[in-house]
Image (tube, rainbow, N blue to C red; front, side, top):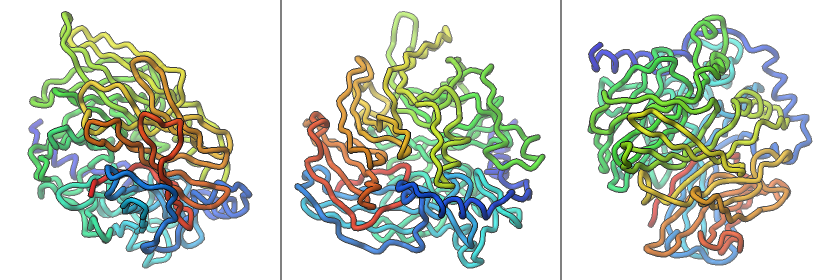
Length: 498
């Protein structure tokens, strides 16, 4: 099949698995009642702000270093309820982008819902009009395009003076970097309109942006190469048998690396009325497949296999030449199964805590040519891994990540920086009432750098922004800003220096 025909099919499919079913959700209103009845203090992190959050000033303790003067953008699901109905999965909520402007002893915050066509239409109607990742509300109509169901709720990509709010099943959404006003969908090229553009693009040290998109209904993986100034260089779609749910990937100097868990889309389940999530089947016999694609020639691909497991996020990958050929090292966060996405992240919408298997920081080695693939699971629970952005695709040692998973509240209570070669880790525990969100590494010239991130204080009902010296994490924050309110728990973000 010609590449342009593959692109046409993928653009037409986009989030096709999401488009077909009109099944009614059972007891939909009960989820909102359950949430309201819950006495869990942490449920404030999954409440739906009724409107945008205007610019507000935070109370600052200490002083944020000059290297972190700039803007931290964060994105996540926030619009969980509408018209008395509550979504059945955390990942369904309409996206809200947070903007933290940092300057020494001052931090200002604002938050705005991404005004996607879906959100605008549903708010106007006062009810849900279409299905979502893990919910089929009653009385929904079939969407007329992939972007009519786009919630833009996972991450952000600052690019060419704008900020792109990212989802997975359709286009990126353009935002004004200063006001967060929604400017419309990003169309890289007319024939690519509506194609899946994933939420974890990778930016090479030279500024080149790499990304992918999954067209599960067609078994097609979209690939993108974007120049530092924001112009599309290349896009193509490659066929992948038994294409699974892929959320993240990695790059090296010469390759794109996809770890593919055995959570595979089954069209028959979707046709029978399942939502998109429940149309996936756990097939451990497939193992964890590693697809390695040559950056220069996307037709050069190799498939290797690791033990079966599930993942959301990858830290980084790098390659070296050995006597046996090219060897790729990749670290990622591995779970034994997909219980977190099927159960834990659902029950949160009821205000209930259901513990899933602990994800572990894992280091894998892929020997190209021979196809040998091995891994080491570190005895360290982890999520939201981030590295020094200057080391993307290059050899690295340190990964910043959340750790110390809790039974109640959900999520993680500490932030850590771990050496993936030795397993040694330093960490800071926020306390029993804190839910740690993603923290980023911010470079500072040739110095050790800084760690910057947010945490929800469930006891004080407010969100905190903290900054740590990267080499003295256990010493605690050198500066901390406290908002006068709690933000909904989000997913991913990006820092833009002033």
